[in-house]
Length: 287
Image (cartoon, rainbow, N blue to C red; front, side, top):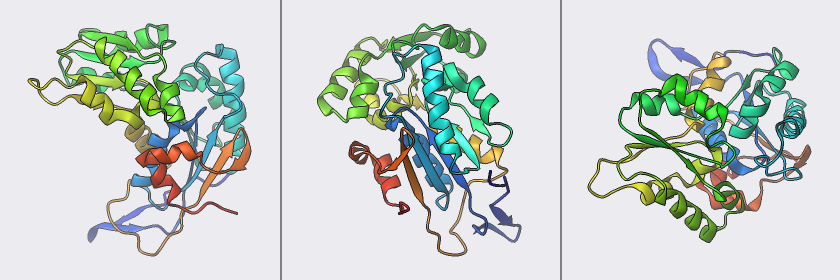
């Protein structure tokens, strides 16, 4: 396991000076390309970071699987990523975070910090006003989601909106299916909501389409609450890092390793249909 280290230093005389002398490697896992948003967030915060993205094309989607089955798949995908000796592992999947986070932490920590993904219900509640939570049918109304609402938004006006087919449409980059699924969910979303919590990592890849579908012309701009930026920042905090604010002192050559159900491969072509996927594809893949 790579030594966890503070690998970003700020000079008190130059607040924006960045030293990338020590490299950091972050792994991310999901059943599919929903991890792209969090991976892109890591790339923006630490453009020098090596990334390991571990997907499960053989077992996706995880959403319809029984919890014990999700945990079995998640452990396999996580162990494949851990074999590449990352400094931290982001579970960039709401389903795996709900069902498998304790098992993942028991198997991998303390050697490898494991950071889960939690729907951004708390910041939505803090923002005030009514809000909606878009999530998969399995998550909508689940004890897990209801518990988060009770803990963080008990006094808020919250509408849970199931989004059947949206994650699958995003995964396959099916434009027509995305439009249909977004329109169906928007029709279930109350007109007066001030914000929408994106309760599945896939949804962040089509955030602006969701905004367009829900935004009412006579109301203030809709706020979308995703998890990617927060989970990326949390991973760096666990390592003692501070996000980059300036240019690196020397050129860097970040690497991207793609694992497909444990096998090294290439980023799926459909990932390139999203800005986040294109950002990742711009770095070097080993080989």
